[in-house]
Length: 155
Image (cartoon, rainbow, N blue to C red; front, side, top):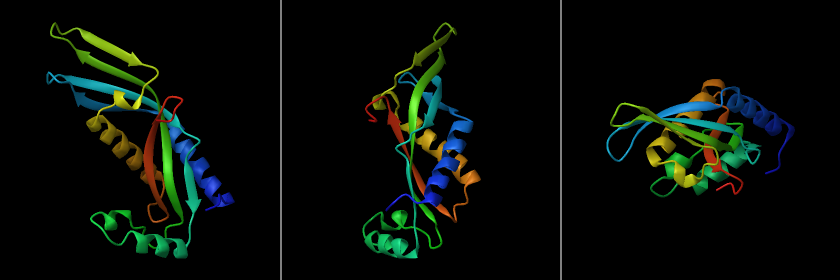
């Protein structure tokens, strides 16, 4: 699908929503059972691709995703106008916790890689970003997903 003027405008709206407040905090737990506060700084990744779609695209997409164990999860609702994946680049991770002497410890990672985030934190990021985006974007018009990218490799 080609990027139309409307889809490029949709991408600009999403870019503003992401860059407006580019930090989130997610609670996690280390292997010892201690609470860790993970502060993640991110920015909009220009590799984002939101396409303007029509009913014909939705029908084709839904016929492909109608079968299989996850088929219903991949279906697009009728009436959706924009479809795609918002890419968000993680640029910094700060972890705060208290050690056994109740002294606050801070670990700052300014060049995070994919392995630096565990699944529970990863899930919190997706939930937060999708909630934020759909708070401002009507889900009757948008069917978007979020993907995280890291460092220069986009891994």
